[in-house]
Picture 1: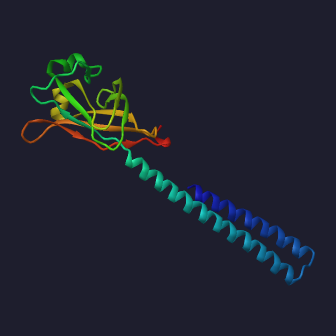
Picture 2: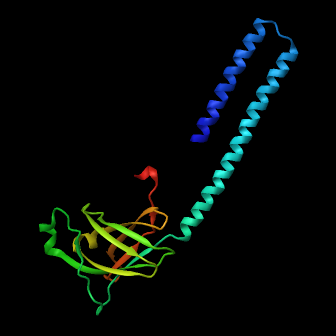
Picture 3: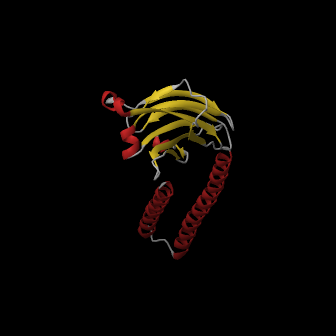
Length: 208
């Protein structure tokens, strides 16, 4: 979009100057040499501008490409799994029941989760968010590579069975890039509760 806007400005300005010079030349009865000079000058300006833009955007493309490679080389991945029988449960409990918890609490269950950073760089988590109830909880944990943290979630069994209960973790990487990662808790074909891990989504300036 920005490139299109700049090209449009260049074309409009060039057309304006061509129109002005043409009218001046006709008014003062300039000869063909003058037209050749003006045409060559305008052509040089336009071609030089396009060459500059080409070099500029080529450099920016490779710069952005290098930044993207660097970002991916340190990108965290917070893997969520259910605790196995015998594992020590967590003391941190968050409710995803929302405002209608009185109705849902009768069929709710508490599930213990283990979050492990299996990515390429550390993550600084800041927020745990319920996608169903829109509840948000402060979750200030630093995940070094390989670090594991546990917590428990109170979830409606109805949400798990019908559409899957969803929650997100928001975090930053070592370059201060912000991400969220979404998880879906649901039942598989064998009626077992499982966790589907989404891929980390980078938050850009346009998303904020």
